[in-house]
Amino acid sequence: MKRWITFDLDGTLMQNPFSGSIFPELEELVSADLNEPCGLKRKLLEEHERLLASGQIVSAYDWDEIVGRLLRELGVRRKVDILEMVRRHSVPPNIFLLDETILPSLKRLKRSGFSLAAVTNGFYKYQYPVMKALGLTDQLDEIVTPDRVGCAKPDARMADGLRLEGAVAVHVGDRLDHDMVFAHAIGVPAVLIHRRLPDALLPLSPGERAESENLLPVLRRLASQENLLPEDAASLPDRFMPSYVIRDLRELFACLEAEKNRERGGERGGSGT
Image 1 (tube, rainbow, N blue to C red):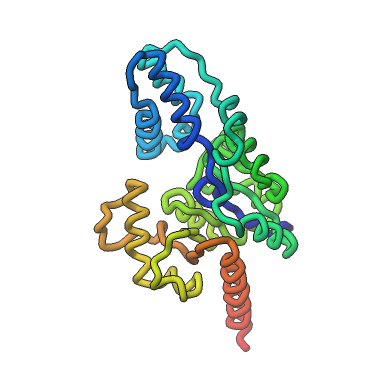
Image 2 (image 1 turned 30 degrees about the horizontal axis):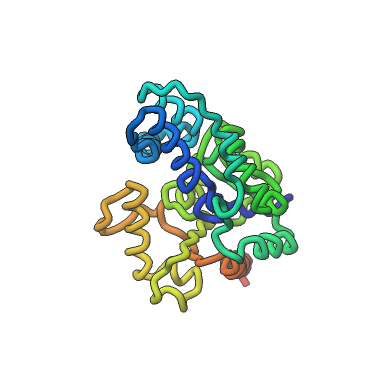
């Protein structure tokens, strides 16, 4: 049976070309068609957030549908091929890995016997060209996307296919609403990756960070950015709380070691010795 480690993609491993390259190009083209500024990028992001907030998570990542609908509302007859734009923009500096530890860490995880999967809310057709260009497809054994499985994070069914082949050890991601909730839903440790931790958290282990009161302002800011709770919320529901907090993938190995030690301790405790 396989031992899976699952990863979010955008904001966790890589930067896609949508916000920085594709949306600005679309805005320029549509503004030229209308002979006036149209604020298309803002409209696209607002519609994305509206769909997320209303629970329409799969639809929130269907950029062909979102773009087509907004163009019709603006009275623009232009046909847009989002996949063609993704392929064309899947070159540096429009896309990049989020830090230099990613590929070496993924290779080390595979050498350690883990199988690796991307579990992303981005559609396969948009994600694959970016992943291929960045070398991620060489390291990941599976790519789980909403258009392939019919649901999106934090729905636990996203992991059903993986769990038919083995067990998920941990899930790694950067969002509370999608990644931490997903990890809790499938009953595995939730590893939050956050590359701008306050100095007070840096000397702590990933597990100690998750228990530290100094993490709470970080979590509140994330919750506010994700429109989950007011920024000054006194507490967060357990489903948003990480089990471990890391700055980069090198620190994931400390999480895996801690889990191994915890399991060993549970086995000793259960043996009655």
